[in-house]
Length: 329
Ligand code: TXA
Ligand code: MG
Image (cartoon, rainbow, N blue to C red):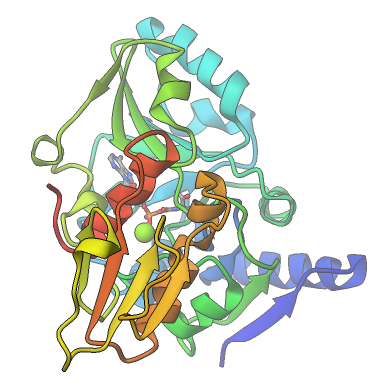
């Protein structure tokens, strides 16, 4: 049985923190809220605990996990910082930690192979979520935590989503309501004082470009980040991406749903979810996975998703939609 513990009142929160910490100490995997999506966390320094994450998610062992740190002080215990990257890393951390930026850095021995899938690098971040922060500090050591969905599926942005994905497979979900960003952290590799963008996310390329020359690495060139496989974030219902819903005419025998960015009236669709009435990209990101799940649960023949403007968070959202459609073009 999977238990869901709320964390609204101080009493509920204290109980949830204690229960989660106890599970983690027992070497179990528990679902925790972060500011991006819900994560499935386990003791990052224990291979047997981390194995439970892979088991519950049915995640292939070649796909490495993000290590969440209690604080900045842990960084150099798990990763190495080269002299030519130090200044840049310090600046990025000062600006974006705690928060939705994951850094891929050379690893230290303390991290078990199962976490990094045998890579010589480790992905690290410090979550800004107050409940997550309280739990990881109480635990006192790094937590490996991928998104709390089964492999290849849409990331969960609420405790209910986690339950849909992992009910009966994990002992505990800590519920802190919907997550604020709604999409997974931005991932950058830091090499020789330069940044390579591995996954778009809440920290936009414009924000990163303010720091140094950001090098864009194409999907084909980064097999080392398997979460970036072309087909990912996939609903069960087939999904296509269009420029505008007006150009799409559903056939009479098909029930189609619309994930809309700009279209308001769409009478030919069986159901519509509008990402943001105000055309606000932050709101659209926060709603994205919930609406995808809702449309996916309607038993439709097809989900038609409208492309967003290819800027900032819009590019990060389009990236998820392309992968939901199983394409990277
Ligand atoms: O916002 C987030 O990042 C959420 C929350 C829970 O923190 N976590 C998350 O984890 O999205 P996950 O496992 O679903 O995605 C992590 C991605 C995967 O695509 C994985 O391949 C990549 O990070 N990754 C992990 N370690 C890596 C490494 N050493 N080098 C390159 N990519 C790595
Ligand atoms: Mg994931």
